[in-house]
Amino acid sequence: MNIKLQILRSIFGTLLMVGCANTSNQAKFDETFNVDEQLEYCVGQASKALKLTLAEGDIPRNIAPNSKAWRYVDYKDWTSGFWPGELWYLYEFSGNDHLKASADKFTRYLTPLSVMPALDHDLGFQVFNSFGNGFRLTKNVDYKDVILKTADTLATLFNPNVGTILSWPRDVPNMEWPQHNTIMDNMINLELLFWASKNGGSKSLYDIAVSHAEVTMRNHFRPDYTSYHVVVYDKNTGEKIKGVTHQGYSDDSMWARGQAWAIYGYTMVYRETKDPKFLDFAQKITKVYLDRLPKDLIPYWDFDAPGIPNEPKDASASAVVASALLELSTFKNDSDLSKYYLDKAEGMLMELSLNYQSKDKNTACLLHSTGHKPAGSEIDYSITYADYYYIEALLRLKKIKEGKNL
Image (cartoon, rainbow, N blue to C red; front, side, top):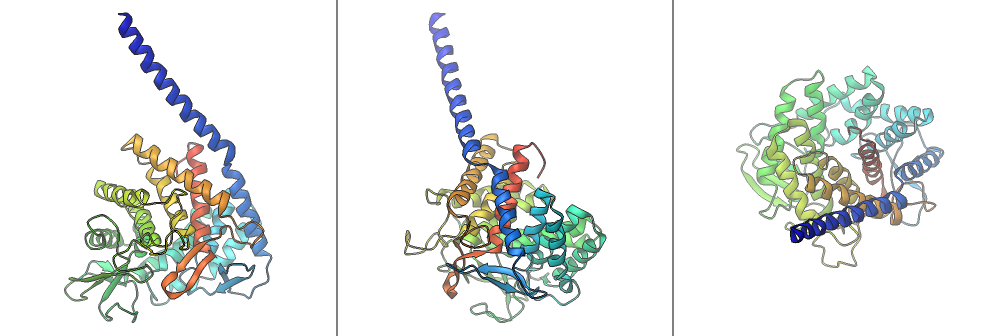
């Protein structure tokens, strides 16, 4: 009896120590990382950027290293929706009417995208991040009309012979145009179709999104669950011709942001479909990413880049994954896995906040993102999509801490 009692006391003591350690770690995290403070910082940075003089229709995209000057683009640029989306998120946090008015102004710049032929697959990035967040927060029916029209436009790029949306309807090097190309980034744009199908649009939009996710799942990944950036298909038969890269180091490498798009995309597809195969797949492609991360949890631009550790980092990939992990952590199929995802996301956000914030260097939120390394473009830049997903992740973490739905 005494022996049993000693064993029970030992087990209880161990559990108590583990519990205390976890509580201590959480207390340490809460003490050193205040989510509201990071969001207030982003509000301040965006407010400074809004004071800069720019021409009507100009939208911030990036800032070069050691510069304070934004490079601006127009509504046709694939990144055009991130800045208004960022402003909507910051309005959601702050309730600041100036941010709301600014978000509306930059959002409306993108209206022509809903009534013109599809330039490429990025309509989801452009319109759902801007008008989508705007409608979620204001219920403005004008926004909804633009979203629904744009979803129909995106659907015109769907090729039923292949089962995916055409990403680039033009000649791009190594894509064997006019064959059908699909890039991993396209997974994010499916959210526009899912939303539209459930909010007044055609139910066929849902089927298109599911088909794209399923065909991509079969053809876009290697046996170890790392992803190709691009798959080229025969446009008539749907046969896979090849898997290649456009922005990664090589055709066989794991381009960091490409894998990030996959993780975020399949997490979203599970949310929209509740099909367990998508959750299982999201967890598998997440595992290889997390297993290969450096200790600071911020990836190099490509996991297989030959010059590591002397390669550029990509804060944007980390921000995308942090946001995705927070959503993955809410799917309570495995409590240990959920906690693991939450811990990793918190670690990424802490690292980004402590060591990647722009502060007085410029008026963006983050430094050290890599856009297109092989083309020598946007290397070690501040880029709006890094800021967008960083802010989204902070808001998601805040909601989780407050027991709210994402």
